[in-house]
Image (cartoon, rainbow, N blue to C red; front, side, top):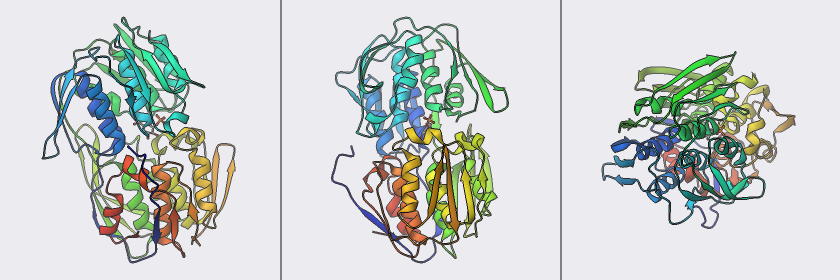
Length: 443
Ligand code: S3P
């Protein structure tokens, strides 16, 4: 749990960033692998699980709800699930720490079980909106017993004894919201349908199929999907191999692009097209990112070679936002070092992440001498090909702001300091050590 004293960190310019970068397992897939294993009957295994604080909190929540989870010395997780609708009432509040994904997905999973459970998290998670998930879950028969003002944590929910299938048109492009409805829909008879106007990451749909559920996803409109899930399946246990997280690879990748003379090879990075908006955008900016090998194990995976590149400013269209929603802080750093203006459009959802990421990203750049504007939901960064640095960045309990600021410091004229690196462990344990082994100067 991240309640310890803040640990400030600094990044300064040094030699090239080079070598082979093995980044930890994908966070989204790791949460889902634990939750679906806990909802299957029998033993599932998960290899390559991200053992960051967010996912470990989800593991603990699964234990508190009655599943058995054991981590072998070889790093393989063995999970004995309790079946759809089989969770037991937890004796204490479920604590999701910093993680919106863990909290919202488990809300969905619990909503289809006739138990009462209290959900809580850290100061950042307590600020984030939960009503977006509670509204459809109430339609499905769950009852919210108590909630903090504005539909926030801590909250207590009573799951439905007889869950009701719904057709739900998602008002925001959120994979967490979609997943919560689908996980609750597992307990309901008949078809639960989610319609999204803009497709969000589809790991839940893919993994439900892998665990034996009947689920069909079809294109809907220009950018959307219509997903139909058959309720009350007997989920079969499965083996999951978690690929490397593209959202974590983003940090060493941008570092290698910015620091002259760098060359990095990434192994087995997940390249699901609903997650690779950053790679597309960086390539449009002139980044040399070469795909060396590809595989498909239920999720597309690739080895990538990245070399230092001169970048130029671009316009990033709003419809790309769902496929790179977590990558705007590090893209803004790349844009700061590019020649010319980068306009990132349609970033409303950034305001409800681990911090108000739109404001936090703008403040991070301004503190280091970059001209930035926020116009409505757009972020505009005026790149000059170089960054002065020398600023102290407030991270607001947000791991991605912390890592983005440190990457900026590796290429700026003067060092960049962050107030707290502790939250990096929520998604990228070993970040400082890995970056150090690749040549980065972090202390
Ligand atoms: C996630 C979905 C996204 C993303 C988060 C992980 C997921 O959130 O920002 O880091 O695993 O479903 P939203 O669904 O709120 O956009």
